[in-house]
Image (cartoon, rainbow over all chains, first blue to last red; front, side):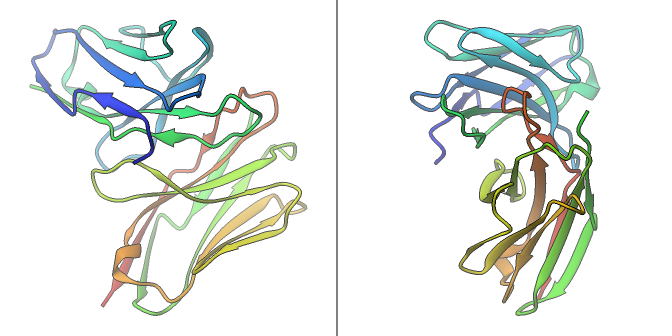
Length: 113
Length: 113
C-alpha cells in the first residue's frame, strides 16, 4: 500500500457524461500528478499540482480539468466523455522535500459506453 | 526537453536466467532515474532508483546501472522468477521539472517456466 488513495475504483458511464475522480496523496506530500493509461499503453502524464497550484501540464485534453484543494486532495474532472477516454487513471504523489519519488494510487478504471 | 527511449518493448526469458532492460535519455542534466514495475491491472510500483552521483545500485536480485557519459541506464534482474513477469517502466527527472518524470514506453517481461 503506497498511502495514496483513489476513488472510485471503477466507474462506468455513457458518452457525453461528466465524471470526477478523486485522489488523496500520502500524508505530507504536497505534489499530485495525474496519469492516463489506456489498454496496453504507457503512462501519459496529464497534469501536476503542488500545494494547490498547477505546476505542469502534459497531454491533457481541454475537456479535462483538475484542481488541488487546501487539504491537498485532488480531483480530475472529465467531461463530454468519449469512448476513447476509457482508461485507467492514476494519481501519484511525491514528497515535499527535494526527493523525486512518485508513489502511485491504485487507479480508477473508467469505462465509457 | 527530455526524451526517454526504452528497449526492448517485449522481453521473454527462461525462469532462472537474467533479464536486462535498457533506457536512454537525452538531457545530460537529468539527475534521477527510477524503475517501476506494473503488474496487470495494478498500480506502478517503484522497485529501484538511482541518482546521477552513483554508478550502480543493488537490491537483492535487482540492480540498476547508470552510464552518464553515454546517457543510458539499465535494469538488471537476476535469477528471474514467475512473479517477475510484469511491465517495467523507466523514467528520468530533469532539473527544474518540478520533480516531473519523463517516462519510457515500457517493457513487457515474460518469464517462461
